Image 1 (tube, rainbow, N blue to C red):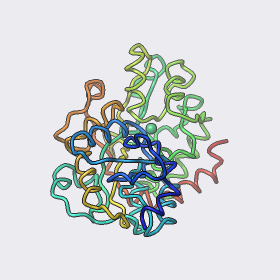
Image 2: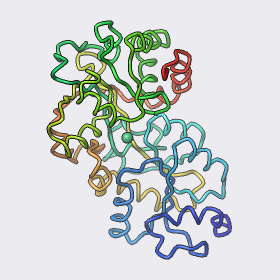
Image 3: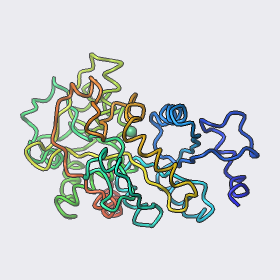
Image 4: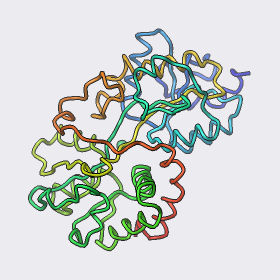
Length: 339
Ligand SMILES: [Fe+2]
């Protein structure tokens, strides 16, 4: 049954690592991954194949599209692992019954409790921080509200000085979802309205934000730390500095990429082995080129990221990110965030 249902998806799966001479008649790989994550997965899967002899195929799409696809495929879904780039999406997939709870001492050891599902249906694999980037020619970091840095950017003193990411992006949605969790819907609305009153410029990717801060187009932006590391790796003279947000308050907003075993998988043991490997021996391969923080505390972040210094993260509340997502999206649309 699986062979026949795979025919329809095999063409798109031919982009996969294991697919040498892939045709619709090839048997499926041992493990099929539906991934919303692009960074470094191909190299990591290749390394896993070399170390274990088990083959991995994957397809890329957006988180929500992959989740809908798994649900639509139902019992016939070829997916063994669902991999996302946002804790809210992991929570959402688990909430919709798409992920299987797994018993894994290896993952319990490797992944701190705050970065995995209390019911063991998903596990974080890489951590990113979304914090403030500033131009040191234009900003004295003492200007930031150390208690509530995100909310502090609603202060009129930042008028005409802010750049932020568009509302389509999960990074923005989860940040606002976390503001709703912290301040309630009205409080979050006041903060976003304050950013808008400050004539925030909205940009369509984080690299543009970093370039705008470097060029002095904006004094301050909110960005994922790894884009800054990536840019500094190539251009060490960029005129930008990271500020760890809200260190005297709730901490800096963080999010995870993570994965779970798909409930309809017919190869759950191998799917679990892949996730375990990614959280342990494969951590370097998984986050290697992307400058994220390893989720496994026994693995060191790379040198450039370590040079950003230590910070206190905001408690990752996947349920809040998931449950508040719709409210965050509605709030942003209602206020005309994207202009
Ligand atoms: Fe990204």
